[in-house]
Length: 136
Image (tube, rainbow, N blue to C red; front, top):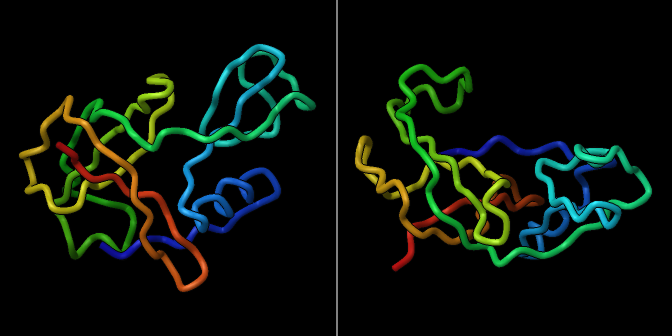
């Protein structure tokens, strides 16, 4: 599937730079030990701005849930409908979820609960984005 090219801002730039190095990172608040994604300027729990840092993840997770997209608002994906859209819960912190269309898995055949691992694919010559594949 074609990928929208992200437009990093001051808050998200470290995440997208890490993707280009094939690393998956999330924010962590050192004041309350909360991890969060997507990145924000402040901690969603305690509101701290000065205590946010970036930490590496294992890049592993499990399929938390799935839907089949029949009516996407993303124009570049409309010709490819229907397609799977899945939520991935990170192994490091299951409260953190990523979205994926799970390439290679037939529509309506997503194995919810299956183990997945991140890989990085090209959205543009300048930007890699995380995508998830079933492992095992």
